[in-house]
Image 1 (cartoon, rainbow, N blue to C red):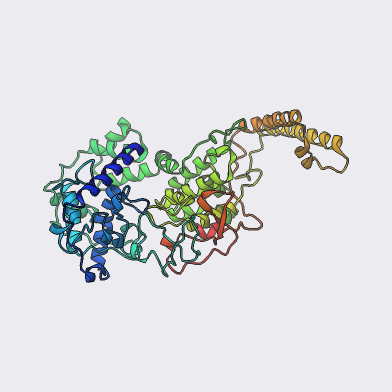
Image 2: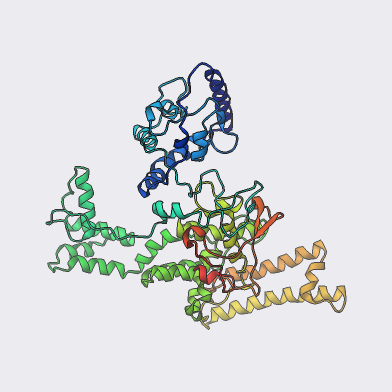
Length: 542
């Protein structure tokens, strides 16, 4: 990204240059009236535009030539504004790249050279030339980078202050049909390659075809000692022992390789090795980040870590793995308290000084970015600038998680082992909790006889508040030193009355806007999506 000062300087230079050249340099030929009304682009043209052209416009052009105060009056955020040209006149001749000012400046053929910091690569220039030859196809229904992507279920003015037009029935139809990320998964046919050594399955066919296309040949087959080292490091993250190497090297059985794989997959180290990668996606930590004077530790974080390791070692299907992490308490398997630890996926994020809006934002982010690969939280304050995520969709998910509070005490995730260590732990914990209860009871008696201990806390003086905080820290400290039992699940629960979300204009909690339903993302759900009906909607989301 350019610095602010560089952008301002560039804008001043562009404006001055265009004003100077306009009187003395003929503009590109004006488009005929019929050229300004494009025919609907073909699927192939849509694919070409979305994969080759739009990324160039977003990356190199629209920072200065977008909808907000476009430099030199040139707005490259839609076909209509492109055809309108700049302050100096038309910049494209439909179907004629050699007569188009746009192509001249990106070829660095005149006084004005764009982008100014570096010439585009040859293949990028070729893509824009081809686009002009095709007649500048631009999917009319696709959301434009600098324009709101409206949700058809939300009235205008939903995501900010500027008025917007009515959205079509399905504003994401074109991008859903053309962008690879939103198209249905397909089973491609395996390429044809010469059968023979090195082709054991279809994966090998794809690899060999790609190598052949690049003029490459496969490396020689690895010897057995190399093979077992590679696969052992890959699957369990540890080197093979000398005994394991010798056993494989000297095993004449035809299934020697399969036995090695099965042994490694059955190792507890397999789950420990690969759990690390998912724990990174889940932003796993056993602390809360900066929470001022509050205890920053998550005492039961290990339960989620162990759940991920156990899931991998138990070959838990991926769909169940995801469902349990979002709604284990609501699934048919909810009678197994061990699965509740899966919801650490949602609850183990930072606590942002206990700001509720930021905590919920973090939970939306870990689900959408971690599982879907979409930066939905960019739409917290405005419609997403590049992806088809309107602000309304963000607050639809906000309503789901705002309706899913954490219980005051994490529920037990198993039966505690009744031993001497656990008995001693309970004795210390109960004694510390009695000190808190007795303090509140005494405080209530000092205030009036009808005040309940739970309500007395709200009327304490500052010194009493600090004393109560110290007593509670003793309780939390004992919990932090507990033996491995009892395990507890950092779970969520269902609010008695689901939260009805409103768009928060510009992300400001003090500016509630239109009401939106709790529901899934429009780009993925399609035009027939329905609001969630079951409580928070967390189970339906899962």
